[in-house]
Image (cartoon, rainbow, N blue to C red; front, side, top):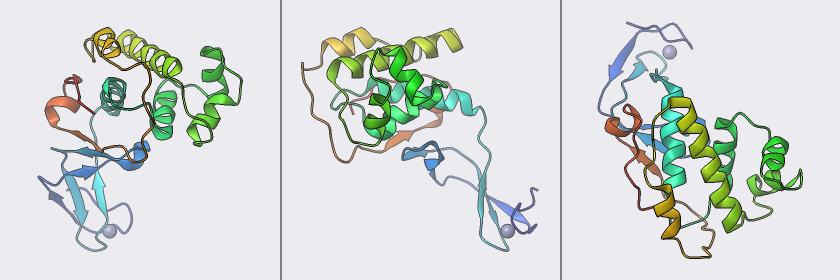
Length: 175
Ligand SMILES: [Zn+2]
């Protein structure tokens, strides 16, 4: 049994409770994660296996969404998972140094072309990393998009079942 890292108290496992993984900067709800609760101070702990894989799945989920442009926090998530600073990503995309940082702060909206380019870049990076396909049919997804989409104010939460986040495969999402 793990001890509480806050107070040293005894912890008990909490099962079947969805876990909000907002440490990644997005509202991601994970099912099938065992959490531990401190009996003394009430602090909740969780140990996630294979965070890298989990981040790839979240990234694939974001790149598969069709209805709206990437949001500021999604752009930030993809950039961080690419291990790039905002100026570096701007340079990769052939943009002015401040552009990516402006997207992430909501000062400027990403364009359709840049949205698709960033998704492609990310999916290519993900495929190189794991040497397998996470998100099928990016060309098909892009081909079904209207030429211009709006940005949305409050995106839907990403909800992942163990069959997604443990296997590393994203079923085509409708978001
Ligand atoms: Zn405690």
